[in-house]
Image (cartoon, rainbow, N blue to C red; front, side, top):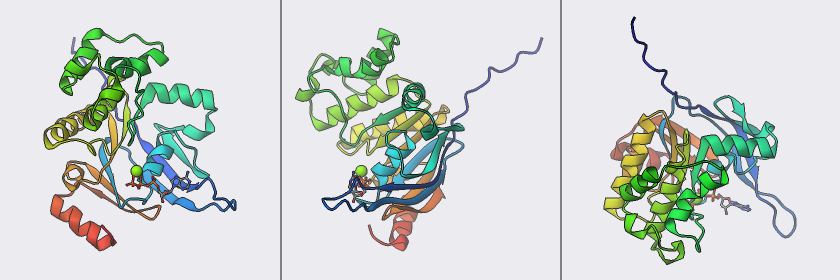
Length: 252
Ligand SMILES: Nc1ncnc2c1ncn2[C@@H]1O[C@H](COP(=O)(O)OP(=O)(O)OP(=O)(O)O)[C@@H](O)[C@H]1O
Ligand SMILES: [Mg+2]
């Protein structure tokens, strides 16, 4: 009998329709727009880079896309599931199974060890994790020797790598990473980008904010942001083309 290939997982589509996000309000209660009607279709998965000047709204966009922060207007769906029409509990359960987030400020727990931090999402989801998988990921990111160290004693780059280990160990189908190489040296930047690229070719959708043109040049798709808006979306570009496009769009 002919053997059939096992069905491959397909990367989930992430779609946003006209997201508006307002600031929480100043002393006079005035709310300013942070995201001004962002629409995006990230079907087909792969590695997406989000680029733009500081304050453009990159982190705010990632929070809305990942279910962490409800937009004031508009919709976000992952694989057809409309995130914000789910109740809080259902959304949390759905996201825990589907999405990992690597925060710009890492969001590790300082008094826990590296290994405890990396295992935390599994503990919260009451899921078992193979000790060999923990070993492997810590070694991959050069943290094996630091596994028993409290996170508060680590360097910034070590904390960033621990945050990546924590996100990847859950084997999510979507990873949002907010400047995942911001604190890393060249060698560790290379390791992290290779891992994110590999995941993106294994039917995981990876969305990464970066200020680094060479990292953006590894992406399959680039989203350019300015002043709370998505002003341009392209396929893969080389370093020079990214610099040209950035200059054409104005600003750094
Ligand atoms: N809760 C909030 N209340 C008021 N303003 C906010 C709030 N959150 C974000 N902002 C503002 O919205 C803008 C976009 O912020 P965001 O953190 O998304 O930018 P960013 O593109 O990620 O910048 P960076 O590259 O510096 O990380 C900034 O001007 C920021 O001060
Ligand atoms: Mg940011």
